[in-house]
Length: 283
Image (tube, rainbow, N blue to C red; front, side, top):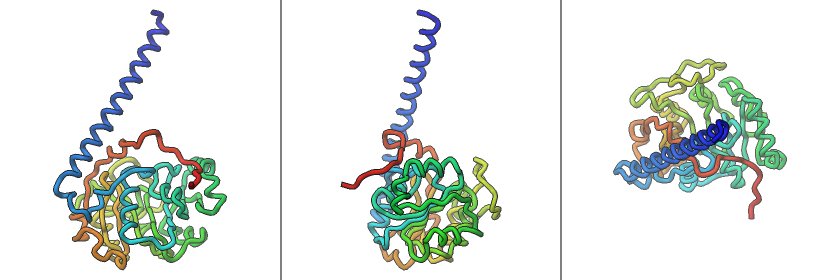
């Protein structure tokens, strides 16, 4: 065997080994998820984690969002999400493909260009409005209004990795039925902490970011929202407007009841092929 053939064979074996390791990781995560869901804590049908599933969301948010709207209904099937990157791992891509209308805001020019390339038909039809901008507490309301969104909307999703709390606190232009917002699961209840507001600050990859779940629950109460659940990965919390909750969700509506610990590895559980977005035809 020549040296070149030997290198090729070793490379192929390394690739096979990597694929096997990746498959083993996904199988272990799936098994762990199933084992957790079998525990008494998750038995109550009002607990939203029982309904989690992934289509385009990073974790199980797609299924949880679907279940929430089954319980509270929709108004106009409208959404706003910022921090979407290219859109292939966000909380509203599934809704867009299902006929909803909404606004995406993204600050990275390359990601905006990719959205324009892959979702041009949705932009052209007006189903999706796209704005390239960094979102701050100072500009968030103007961004919404200038894009034609105000008053009641169905879903607001906030994921900017640092100033999420302060931006939600500042929002007045829209009144969502459901708010999905990132929390810092490192800061367990009853810790009520939030990073100081710095409009230009970006996440540095550490666990110094955002706000604890308890801090967000307090802010939600002030704004008229009740926590109804968190996703399995400990990444996002779900808040429903008080007037819509009724007895649809698990009580008590506290951080202690709904907190999920950081299981960020859960995002490694993909749904098959790598995610990709493009035009679909409804039949």
